[in-house]
Length: 397
Image (cartoon, rainbow, N blue to C red):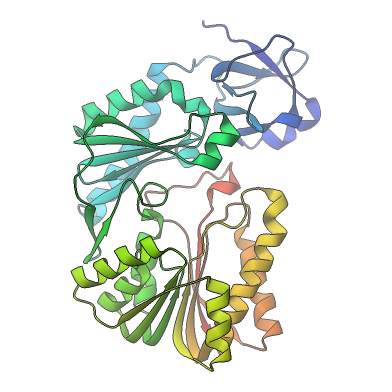
């Protein structure tokens, strides 16, 4: 059996891992006396030698060890990795067989598939790998080979977020791993809505597939005058135009580039009742409120506001302010679609924030639907942070 270097877990930190959480933080271990390189496979043990788990070490990251195996008899080798990738793919195929073909799909969802730090999205013939952990960098050749064998993609594009790169000690910069990037924007159809986007200039992997079912579900509740805050490429607005009955839509975003693409997407779908406006969302909401504007529906889909636990309180304050503004802008009986993609903010915390906002704005709020990420974005019960996406559809009186 393969022998790996040992990293000692502080006994007081064992309880935090008993449920199978895959992150071992720097303060939870006794640092090795002999320096280990980034990406070294290690056995996490107690000081008395008892095996706890097997993972990959990173002396640069606050997450010192990412755990991938709890069985001392199973090595973290190529066979293990391919097995995990095949299990992830099998889940997606079951989902696809149930709903029919889709143009785009998440193939691997990090902790949700037991592959912490690895995200893979497929858009038609192109595959995008997003690394969120240095642990997966040395395994890219195996991942690329697996993707080639299973999908024969026309291109494989690697994305590494600059902030993640700094935290994980990864090289900065996206690059092509295989094939050639499309000369034009990618195009997919989502529930009858055509979306164009850029793999290079788009956020994350290019488009937010996690909101796919939420855009469709929310659309059916939307009518009258709609406000779409942080609209990005226009997903919620276009779904509402396709499946709801909005008379007018005002879509806001801080990014001029995103709005330009959203406007093109509206033209692609022959939608002509959307007005796109650039600006800070808080400032825009304050201006709309001061002008006495009112809406029948408001969608809030802001970017992540809490990257770590220390930022949770500030994130909740920001969510409070956004939702307070939205509730004041709604007509009695209006629909609020409020989203959070901050994994450090739990579903209970987010719902409690809405309850506090309702009380302070003297509104009666009824939750119609509580939703999460699309089914191709599975959640690990052992890692509550992997349930990052919350989408709550409410009626506000």
